[in-house]
Length: 119
Image (cartoon, rainbow, N blue to C red; front, side, top):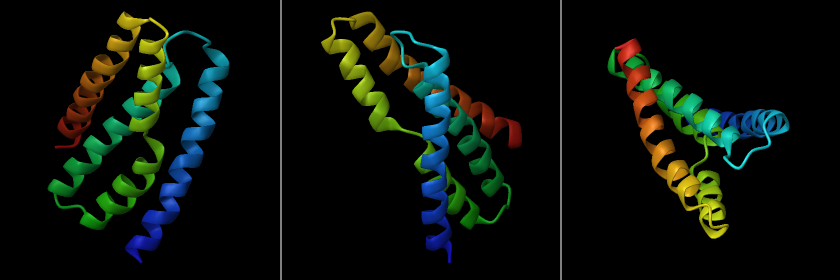
């Protein structure tokens, strides 16, 4: 049953990402891919909190169903990578570096914050 729920929630996470990404892109037409930032930051903080909850005794299946399933479908490393390559190939080197390094560091920071909040 865990695999079925993980699969269904993975699809739901992808649909939520698609909707949120489209809404944000409609609001902010800039060089930086802010929609991907919002999606990945939101997913990172929730995964950090979810991980702390499992460490504190929550059902480990929740981490698989919600973490691997929903948040795996919701967040997007591949899109962030392609957007970074697009920036770099468009000669926006500083924006590309900010996108790659900034997103990695801020996602790590908010995941740690979500973990600390629940822990």
